[in-house]
Image (cartoon, rainbow, N blue to C red; front, side):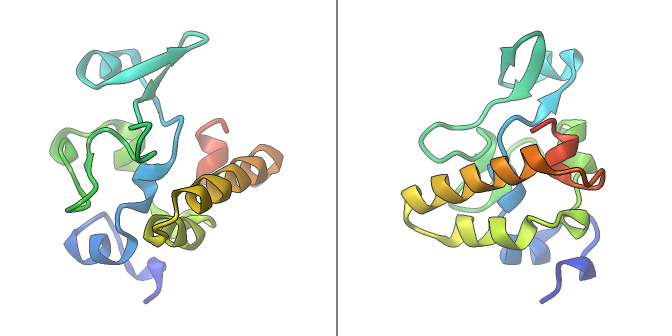
Length: 129
C-alpha cells in the first residue's frame, strides 16, 4: 500500500499507518491553541503534549488509534500529510514495534536526521526539529 494514495486522514489510512504522525514530538502549536490543548512551553514556544509512557500525543487513544480531538485538532495536525513525509514509512515501523527501546532509538535517529536536513518539505524540519 502506498502512502501517496491517501488524502486526508481517514479510517482506511488509520488502519495502515496506525497514527504514526501522532508519535512525533515537539509539534508546535499557537498560543490560542495552547489555551485549548494540553501543552508544554519551552523558550516561549508552545508544543502539543506527548504522553511520556507511550511517546504518542496525549490525545491519541493508542488502542483504537483515534484522536480524541480530531474534529478540532491543532493546525499542525490538520496540515500534516504523510504523503510528503519522507520519514512516514520508518515511523510506521516504530509504531508497530512492540519494543519501546527500539521506538526511542529510531525516534532519536529521526531527530538527528531532521536536525541535519536541508529539505524544506520535510515535516520534521517544518516542526523545527
